[in-house]
Image 1 (tube, rainbow, N blue to C red):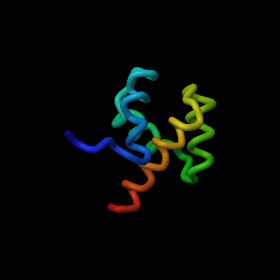
Image 2 (cartoon, rainbow, N blue to C red):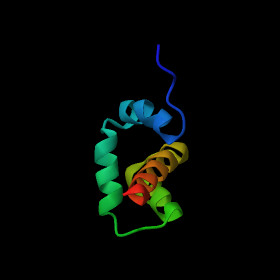
Image 3 (cartoon, one colour):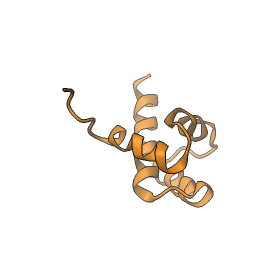
Image 4 (cartoon, one colour):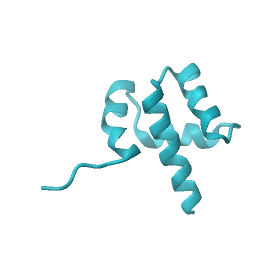
Amino acid sequence: MSAPVKGPAGHFPSIEKKYGRPVAEWQRLIRSSPLARHGELVAWLKSEHGLGHGHANALVAHTLAEDADR
């Protein structure tokens, strides 16, 4: 039995189920946005795409962390 996923990625199954888009698609949207700051991206996902704060925050945090590691 594997350990449960922790951190932002722990939200991914519920994000995909609730909003009907794979996480990779959300990440493409985030990366294609002209916005760059965490808070701006979270607010944009909430206002333009109807995500809840926790889900938007998880997607942005994970995406920006991935990009910083590159």
